[in-house]
Image (cartoon, rainbow, N blue to C red; front, side, top):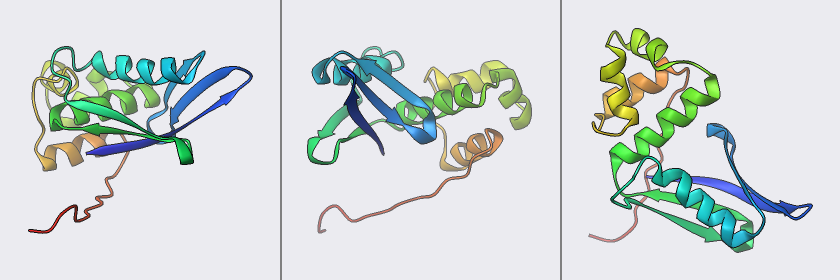
Length: 138
């Protein structure tokens, strides 16, 4: 699972941005910017490093590659919920579950099924576009 964003420098401030998720990170230099991106994700992935951040300097873009579905979904759910300024209670109510049950997807302690992933995004007011591409020959 990969999420892409853009970055750039203006007035001696480096900014990374993922528009769809309202994800913003700032720093005084490029190295610090990428460190701050990693640190913001490590808040969800405290021990395991199930992600990597890659720089495509030619295009001023970056990619966050998640190796773990629960971390990917937690990052997406929490980012979108914060963007929409809704509580976990409201999302849980739309899903007909308790807040505690829903919060386990944001911690992340539970990996959602694909159906549950779609349901949570729908409760947040979003839909999924799935992009599948071949990465190697069998």
